[in-house]
Picture 1 (cartoon, rainbow over the protein chains, first blue to last red):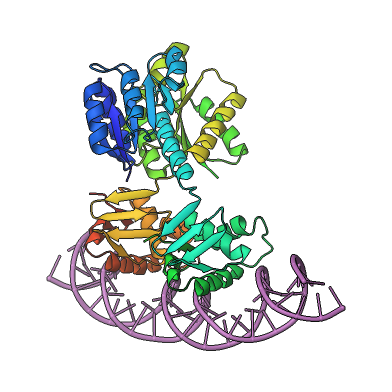
Picture 2 (cartoon, rainbow over the protein chains, first blue to last red; picture 1 turned 120 degrees about the horizontal axis):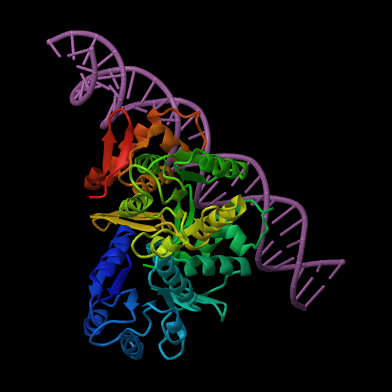
Length: 226
Length: 226
DNA sequence: CAAGGCCGTGACGACTTTGTGACGAACAGG
DNA sequence: CCTGTTCGTCACAAAGTCGTCACGGCCTTG
């Protein structure tokens, strides 16, 4: 479950945000000033930071800059809370590097939407790695190459695409229809059982690395990394 | 089609809105005061609520706040109807958390646009909660995966869907008919006792996490988070 | 406290889903 | 034009899943 750091010096605002986030199943860490924020960000490495611009000790601008400078925290999405719409330009600009903003007063609902949007955006962009390794299995997308314990496995174009898409979405079940859409591209004339046949061929060629290919009965297939 | 709760104490206004919504294919539920509104919102879990600010029993502000505080209704978009433009700030502000507003008198056309806008926004930007944790029980929807104290539990497609729907509506009792509709999808040929059998299998597989599955005698089943 | 209804449980047969081997069409390369 | 590969479909068998039913305990209700 995603962990979120909420930084604001107004207890009411923190409480409101905290309540909403917890209701949505997030783990919440809070901080009331800039110094605390930096400390907690580094200590608990949250998945996202909700940061008020006007806070004591070290202000929001400075916190943002410092977090971006540290390699450990540079990648964490920051959602800025600003009182004045006029400050938006600076917040989103190069100077600060926040990823999104919400102006006060905000509706909790709006805030939640932004947070989920940021988390999703990060998820999807991070997943597009081109060379993937899972134990003995290596999938090199640009080279169009697959190896199992260092030995090259010859896959046909369709098999390769199927494996790639499953691996890129590892952990998530893909229905046969979804796979047809993505691997065979809009060709819904094709029978869903065709997917099964290709999975069989894939498994055959991958040998022991076939353990990564899970069948989820009644739903579809899933790639497991471990 | 989406279900919409309309709350206003003026019968004329309700009728007008209701007529327009029904013409557009929405399912409409109405309430004339705040107490009724809260009751119906919790009972029928609409996709959106059109809420007049000035209503008897419990006023609009209070209804809004209470709905936001309940995890079961916190996510429902609220469209406020206000008589005075001056109230807008409070309505949209931190204090209330409405998602949009329309000032009276409004044109039906304007109202419909706002409603459709809110519904679309939710559809496109708000992902359903995908990963839920309740103590030792974790339900990961996209992965189609359930774990109890870290150990994976193998569920069939039907069992998983049943658990997911109950968990997403935690705290609220679901009748067997409702569950048949949502899990088995329009297949009302099926015996209601079938739900019992699946609940049994779920409980068996979940082990000690089965404590989250409550039987409400004479009514149905309920997922409890704690 | 007795009757009736509701729900948990175990069993079972019908049905669905998936893995597998085989086959012919389409296709690319020589 | 020939040949080998790839691809989509099919049929079949095995395994898993589903819906129903009957029984019995327990709770509710009068």
